[in-house]
Image (cartoon, rainbow, N blue to C red):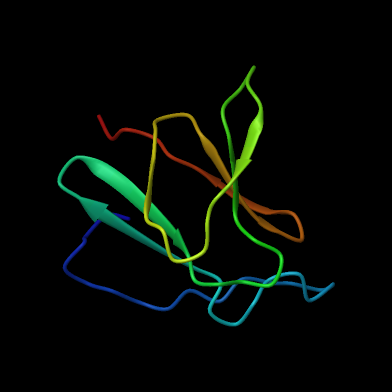
Length: 84
């Protein structure tokens, strides 16, 4: 997310249809990245290297830290990074 003032819909490929049409919301709040599972069928999972995976609770915003990987399913992931 480079500009929190410009919300947009991002379409991602889901050949196995593991990703819901409105799967998750990703936004910034100050210095934080916040991800909310929008009651998706297969959930949103977050992991940090060397630690376990946690599944986000639907409708509950969750701060995702630097280097954490967000998994939407069907091989679609993104990592939170700090800009220089």
